[in-house]
Image 1 (cartoon, rainbow, N blue to C red):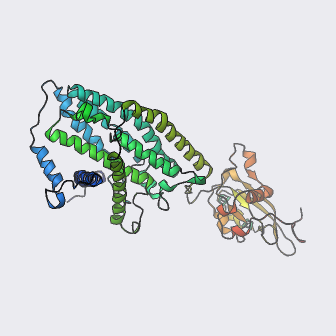
Image 2: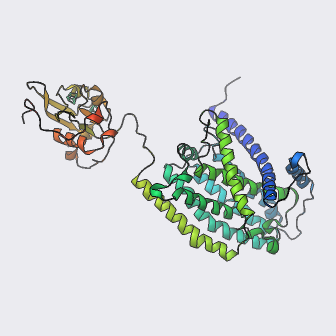
Length: 473
Ligand code: SF4
Ligand code: SF4
């Protein structure tokens, strides 16, 4: 049998992984409703669902069957096409947000390099389906609910995006797996530079914006029962209602996973580096913690008015999230937490070193670096002296250097080193012609622990006066 082309293999692999993830999400969403009902019941000293199956474990399945068997009623005055399409348009983005979530290292559908942008953009698309549902129902309660939804979601999406960008600034990457991996030592929720609790405040802001984005109490004016019955979905029943519910809970779970990834360290935890199973388990537990935190707030507070909701967003959350983002940028700019990975064969300035004990130049003028240098940009003139030899002149044409590091590797005395600093960037070629003094100055000027070489940390001390027998200038 002929082998499939690589593109087809990739497509089949993505389809299978996507199918598995979709079904896992649907199963999870179904049982998360039970978790929420049990949790809320416990908060209110009730038992919660208990009759269907042991401890009510089959209740979600019974609910799903009930919704499937219910009559599908379409209002006579409804815009049928918009009305019928709305649940699908609402559900698809809510499911798509899981596409870029890495559940453990290497475990996910697509680890995009713009993963977080994809998540934020697609997640905001739910608003279209929501408005279509309210508009197509031709019901004044549904329409008012949809307009409120647009108002609220736009107001809270801005602070939501600013807060979600804080881990991006800290990591220097939009890829979700990079953000998760960067928290291996410490989750961003604990990040407090100079005792400023930027991490905890950012996580708090994320939880508040999540509550609003999910239309949950105290921000649930979309479906305020006393005013709007069931809001934009008041005219929906049966499977269409089930699809909307499925989309809502999928969105809640997706943002819970995102919160756990951005602030709680995603899959990091005991044994997570040895097995993807453990990583996925930790991630799931953290996401469920975020979900239960949101649920706890939902069942503890009362609904607030529309004007109060908008005031919280525009007057408090938006400025606060902007200040947090700018403060994060300032701290990161001064003290980068991310170590730049340098390519193997390209670093920075070349420099000459001194001997720590004697203060003498380490270069013995052996000219090995001159011979090995491929573009022949080094010129050395040896000065023979009584006890040892020196370099009488040493010039390096940096503008033609290939940064191959061969001169560093061949030098028998570690006299020439390569710094990981690019601070001497200039457009003037004359400044790139380095003589011995300038090469020594560079060696003293920059942090020696950055440089390549073997004995460097012992070499970068200010020079002492050369002993008798040193180079004659
Ligand atoms: S880094 Fe390579 S090209 Fe540059 S001076 Fe050294 S040997 Fe020559
Ligand atoms: S820098 Fe090293 S290799 Fe080059 S001349 Fe000096 S001692 Fe020899």
